[in-house]
Length: 459
Image (cartoon, one colour):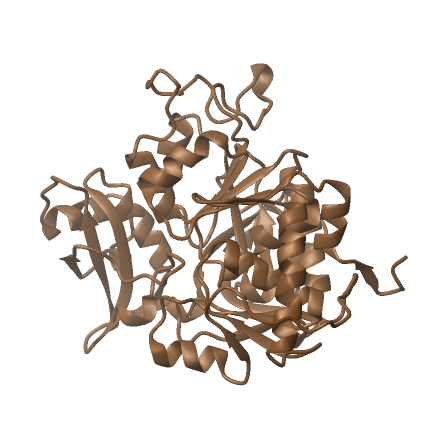
């Protein structure tokens, strides 16, 4: 029996309850819970033989897949702290994030030390140190406890529901909280995580036929729509009247005919209204979410089929809006170092039903001629143009206006459009001071490995 402040260790618990259930599915291999536990236990003893012990940090320099999952759970069976590091970073960046930790950059092998393994998780103990995406500056290291992860999993399950046969598909980096949380939640639930090493639109589109949940950033959603998702077994569209998840009388089923998918969870940045409309027309059951590394992923999540806002807070979370519009978050998912109340640096509003709409970043606000402009609002208007695939808006120093609103735009394949046409489109939908003074065309936008826009590189 677990002591006060502890819970049974997630992986042994799942392996004891459903040993033959798939724990991890990758394009090349499937592990049951019994398999994963056996490999994690051997990995824990190998880590001990390398000199790691309880409380020590272990840098996991492995791509998403079986070896990553084995090492993560090996850390926790040993009582060590996992530090996932994105292998796509430069050598100096990887070294900085792994500093002071035992580095694991290959599948665990070699001699094993006969050490006791942990059958409980201390909810106040640090489970993992996860780095932020670095979309607005240098990545920050955030220490998340077992309690943070458990409350996040419980809150997510209440918001989205939980299918006992859940198969949650992730093509997100496991070094960031959005991808890692899928692996952790699945172990807590005793369900299946389907993990791809990287996002490839065709491969993800094919795998969606067997997924019940998928986590995507807006750019990924656009790519899988362009790749033909969703399609019926006969190759036609799965569109149906009433939008995503519609049932007679307007209730949301969360499932579409011809496949088991009940939710595509969209986060990691603003979702352009045009993209949501395209997905709804295709019959995809969307839910929008807002989250941060410091909050162990999800903070708010919309009802499935109603992604027009980021939804209400998780049942265990409290969201407030400060006088200056900043989103403030409280609750047991918040990293201890953030204190009683997390100042997110994001701007938002709450409607009468307590649903959050994220306006943008405080630091990103453009002050032009004394007027405040939220880049996300201008980007949404630009991306509503049928010729525009993506847009990024920032402020540049300007002697007359203080800052000038400027935009970087990626056109859809085969489209031609000049800047004056786009500015005319913006003037029809925005106040004059919000219309970009300059619009430049680009082949792609600068993004982090997790798909977030690198605004700090735009100016």
